[in-house]
Structure formats: C-alpha cells, structure tokens
Length: 114
Length: 114
Image (tube, rainbow over all chains, first blue to last red; front, top):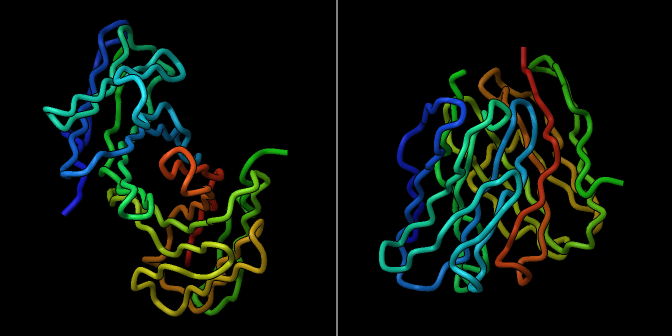
C-alpha cells in the first residue's frame, strides 16, 4: 500500500541551526511529492513540490527538498532556522494511478529554541 | 480575492444546534475537499467532490452533511454534533490533473461543540 512516513512528531533546533525534517514514502510508481506548512490556527500552505522535474526543489522561506528515488525520500531542509519557522510541517504524496489523491504524513512540529 | 475562503473562522455550537460551514474557491478548480484536523491526530479526509459530484465519503457520521451546489462552493452542514467533533475543519480545492493534485487550502473553521 502507498504510504508516507514522517520521522519525528517533534523536532527541536536552535535558532540559526540546520533544519532537517524527514519524509519517506512507499510506492513502486513515480510519485508527486509535497511539503506543506501550517502556522497555529491557520490552513496549510504549500512550501514546495516535486512533480518530476528537477530533483532538488526550492520553496518559499528558504526551504528546499531533494527527491531521492533510491531512498524513497523527500527530506525538507533549511540551512539556518529562524524563530518564524516554528510551525507544523506536513509531507504528502500523490500518484497518477490513484487519481492524484494526496496521502498525508502525520506531521512534524518544528520547535525553534532561542 | 483570496484563493479559498472559509466562513465562519470560529464557531461555537451546542449539541442540538444546526449550523453550516461555507467554503468558496476562486481558482477555477474542479474538485473540492473537506478535511478534519483534531489535536494529536493526522489529517482526516472527510469528503471529496469532483465536478460537483461526491466521489469520496470516508465513513463520516451522518451528522455531517456536505453540499456542493457548483464548482466554486462547498458547504458542510452540521447537526446534533458531539463534543468529540470539535476540531479545525479545512476546505481545499484542486484541479487534480494539474501539478500532481496540489491542494489549495482555506484558513479553516475552528469548531467547538459544547
């Protein structure tokens, strides 16, 4: 079955440190991959997406993610964390053979320490 | 106008009340979705409408009744809810064949059932 796993329900980093949020998917067919961010009491906002073009994808707010087919991963990174990055981050995947229905990870709450 | 608009943003209701949540999208999409987001739980897909026809209903209790009168509007009618129905209800829209099914979300309606 197709699924998405986000490692770590909470990730804590110091301000200025590297942010790494992990996302792995399971599927034998090519995926479309997404990262969304949710600030408190708001909806989800698209950070970036992979749709079979370049494997290194740059998004908003200095985030980027790399699609690694061999590892079935799409980890989200940012070189230097800012206090405003504190939010919940969701990884999602879709497939053409599933009518592009998004399958969601459980989310990772990013905590920034001053 | 913003892409996806949800009203009201906050709603408090008793268990015997009847209320409705409204969603409107101005993106020309042909699919609309209702999600439920509860604390400490993954995103739950409730309903999907494609071309104004319901294509998915994930075992949602009948006290939640969706309505999609046209491709731009989606309602969630609520009646005789339970306290455990308190959650953030998110509306989203998409054009599934474009960009791998990327979803565009509203800000959400925070529902509290007393």
